[in-house]
Image (cartoon, rainbow, N blue to C red; front, top):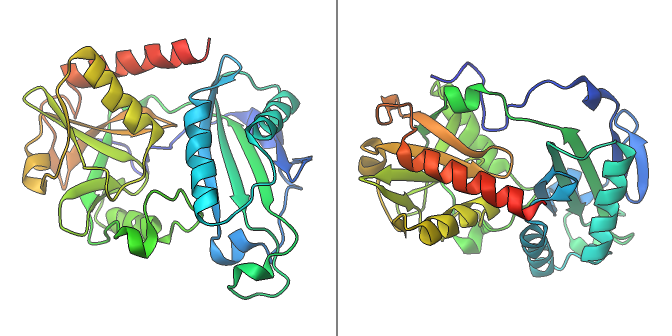
Length: 307
């Protein structure tokens, strides 16, 4: 079982992170001095988008895919980032250089609608341009995530319909997922397994979710979950390697009876799920031959992409 307070983003402690420089609207500031206004749209309303990315060998893994998601989401909510993709890459490069970072680095790139002139909701009150923040940390997942896995609990909080708040927005408005995470912790688990509005297995509060049954890889239809970059890479790798993979509706009965189960995300790549609702997954803590093969294929893909 996973250790107490384990999450899919539990990282090794690294003293170098105490003095990181953070990019705030074009200025690099020590983490203790990096601040945004209390009038900022992101702080006040959760009005913003973000991306999580990883740096390997001096190169951002799957940069184009992350930028596709970021720029599409910002366009959909009429949020002008104030720079093009080359500008974003230049800011990332500057921040990495200022911190002496080249490998095993995690970045959170955040864009909000900016500072408001008055503390109210209407987007027109944000008149000074966007707020852009880049936080980079030396960051490696702890070994226990692979050796012990994650415990999931099914929670009542669901990922909603696209016309309420589309889960494909990687937005600052994460309260829905925070509530789910709290419900899972109160149930004695590490993270939450969330259903879709129809009661089918969907995603977790932080990652995309997969199961393996009789050698077949199953994940949700994708209609109600984040369009994860790592999720899509896993699906593509399975198809290319001849591993049967299905995006489909399935219920908790299927998940509880799975031979293997794992989560996908930029930080942890693929993390085994040791148990769901107190029921152990398979005989190897969620791991198995399919999981191990996918891990190998994904690691090779990252190496190729970041040469």
